[in-house]
Image (tube, rainbow, N blue to C red; front, side):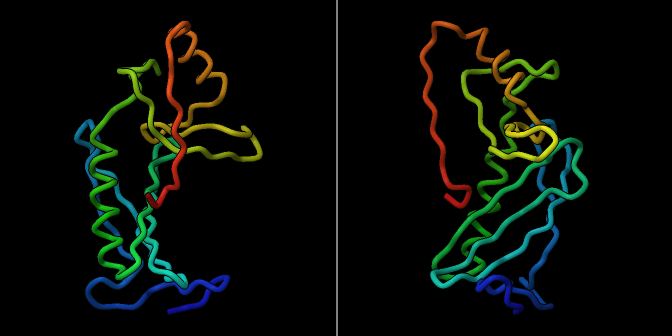
Length: 147
């Protein structure tokens, strides 16, 4: 285990040693490869999966367990499979149904944007998506990625 900002990075060989590589299938049946790391904090374990060599921004997932890295890994696997099974945007970037799930991120070039289905949706794209639903009600829920 190595120390990183007061948090220990769980590593080592053998079964369950981190980092590990794993493949998950997306909504179109494509296999996507991830690197999964585990960090031990004062209250438990956080595992984070980041897609390797994505087309676009890619998928990222995280999960937490107070007890063991294996429990966090099980939650992460369930979350990744469930999230990647649903497609939110069509190929021409229109909403396919009445929900939009992803993550909030930013960079220096584009500023703030969303990542939906592994691809970037900037604020201009989001405005265009919402314009087609003018007059509708909406619900916005922001949650911690490890939930």
